[in-house]
Length: 282
Length: 256
Ligand SMILES: Nc1ncnc2c1ncn2[C@@H]1O[C@H](COP(=O)(O)OP(=O)(O)OP(=O)(O)O)[C@@H](O)[C@H]1O
Ligand SMILES: [Mg+2]
Image 1: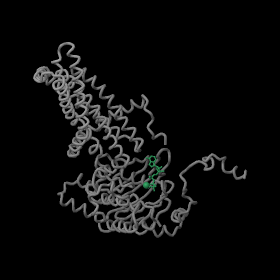
Image 2: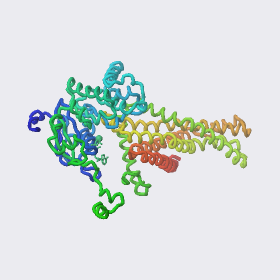
Image 3: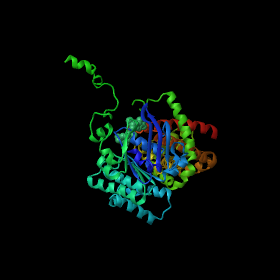
Image 4: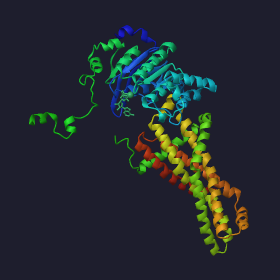
């Protein structure tokens, strides 16, 4: 399946090669390779704690990998100087997993922040841009609220508006659907698709909702165990041709993806003798 | 997990902190040109830390002045020089007490809230969000607060001194019956603008820099947990009090 897509993916906006990372002695990535084609929506899925957020942090230079190459628009991110990295980030929108709104500013000023910091726009134009983006996430009426007055789902939508306010070339969404009701989810899904179709923005979408991902994404990577465990179009993955996909999308606890964070023997942890002997004693 | 929890500081830790804080000072100074782009933010911070500390500094200034007036009037009248009370109060304030007491109050009032604010911004990823929007948090968050400390402290010291002299005046003149003209004329003839007043201003600017540096540094480097922010806030008060008193000795030795 990857062979069919190969020629198209030579024009990759983001190219990850041989990425290896260890955090606190735990291997997160083990020579990971991954391509994000220009103008497409690429979804990254995988069990919780597998390193999806970490991957996005690598791509945006917030975290240095131990080894490997991460090319974004031709620049090798780990080798960039701070100034070059900032120039690159001006073209990238990032939706934080926890929204990370600036608590001192109103919703309006949060969305306006990237514009105010980098562009000298007349107030009227700035206002129009911000209100347009807020309208797109359904929160134009909430412009004057403070972040502390928002619900979790509203905060995510404001953060989304802030991530797209400069019409970047690349947007990274870290779980945009969390905390959204079905109506909002539908609208946000459409918004992500529209940004992609009309402005040709490349998107990386980290999400757990396979149904939503299936409707938005062009290509899906399933990451587990520090490597790409499976990849393909959503339809291909849904067919569940490998153990990985069958387990992951079937939501089964047993299979190649462990549900448990690595731990020592359960019985021993609870203070019982190792599990083998307890059974015999009974 | 225990590795991320701040341990009770030992001497080695404390020295490492001093070193890191010194490096941080250079980073802050390096970020000053960039922070001038956010000059509005600096002005907002001057207003913020200044206004925040104003009430406590006025109140304490008044009381410190009244106590000084009482004590010095009593002591000086034993030598028959009660007329000099106002002068001695003014000298003590301009040269020592004004800058030192204001700096300690400033650390407790403004320093702690700077640390807590930046620490919470770190813990809630707001600093990371700024980085992602290509805004340097060092230039946008840290340096404006540092500069605000340097600007606000001398102003606060002036307020403190004014209120303290008013307090001394109330005690010595209104209450104990010292002659009003004597109080003021002795003061104006014996207080020198350069050696007394201006040196005090230098001192207060230096104290403002030290307190703001420590507060910003503690907030900026705190572990992103509620416990981490709590520790950092405490450290701000402890470290800046020690630093202010130590620096006071050094500066007094050189300036006089
Ligand atoms: N700052 C850190 N220091 C040490 N380990 C970390 C750090 N941040 C993350 N990790 C570890 O890295 C692994 C991957 O974390 P990451 O946040 O990337 O997971 P994720 O795939 O985004 O999970 P989720 O779907 O729950 O958001 C986790 O096992 C976590 O324990
Ligand atoms: Mg994550």
